[in-house]
Length: 404
Image 1: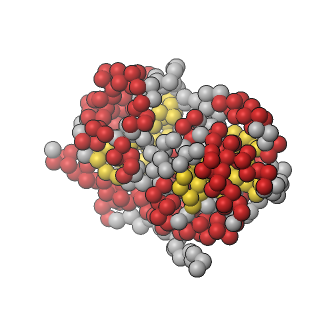
Image 2: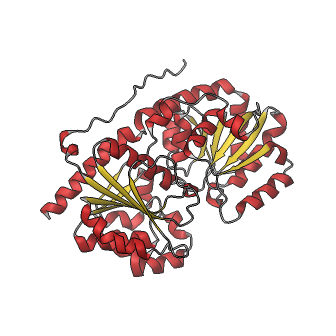
Image 3: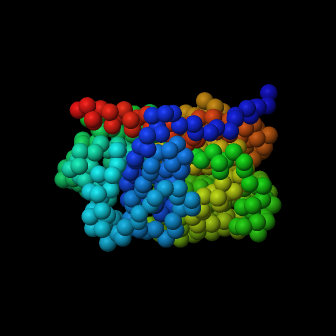
């Protein structure tokens, strides 16, 4: 039986206690779209919060910020980052005490950088509660990357950041479970990330992305969307596509995302070695409207990541009605499986190739998967649904801090 879409356009109706001009300050090290999910989340989150009557400010640095995301809907201050991956910004450090005193609560995003550490210290000094969203950086997998460096940094700096947080915000039960001992040191809550309903309720016409990036190429699109980072395994996507391409002449592969540490050159060479370079398009990073258009034009979305604490791109794909193939270590894999919005695989090119072959060979199955995924995404994973719950967490933490 065909899946039937029945969602209604949601509106945020702020309750009386949310209209008291709650002041929320967000701090994130960078807003360069190349950093993917954390940045996409902050843009959608702040826009939805502003609609509820919450007063929102965002502080960040210009580290790597070649492009500022479209439509940041709150007061945003971007401070100069002096050097290096630590994103040291004396100007941000000097501004934070006053900004923190303005806020009722501070929401800090990610770990391992100067903006995070200095924001946490400013909150502690001012007696203002803060929530820490680690964005998967407390997972066992993440901690194993540069393990000794992170262990030393945690001992010197980040343990204080984590331990003094009023709460840790995990975006999935999988992220919480994988946070190990850290989840037992603090109050915590689980709340998913979302997409902006305005962008996904009414989709662009088919072909917008094709005309802009593919010269109106009419072939079916297999889409990888994300940083070309090793953990996301773009090489696995190339190998999987190479295994099926001869049987589907009407299909191309689009690799949409920013380069990561020079990996683009290696991936282009791999595509050449696999003799599929003429069927692969590397588009670079896409802006938000371009992301929606690309997903809307895609036949299949593939993400064989070794680790994703959430996977914003998966929800974005589902919200456009595109069937998804995701690895089991993507935190949203259980949502994909339960909703039958796609296929969950081991993160190998053999399994991805097999799943691509099935969906490309059975397009009507993909259409039905896409319908189910869109239903779930717009019912449960929009910021309009999520922000009221987030505000409730803020208010509970503020109340506990006032009474403490």
